[in-house]
Length: 72
Image (cartoon, rainbow, N blue to C red):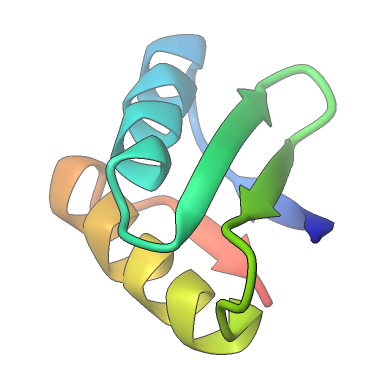
């Protein structure tokens, strides 16, 4: 399953950090962050609860960029 989320991030470098953090999250097959459109596309592994996985993605992103936001 793929889902798109609106994000708030200050710079392209921060967006890259968020993307890397999202990709490292268990349950995420792939993730891309587009700084220009302020969107995060996430592809989830089969059988994963996307809401629970996204809570962990948000926590992981906050660790690398504490002023970012992902609107779930």
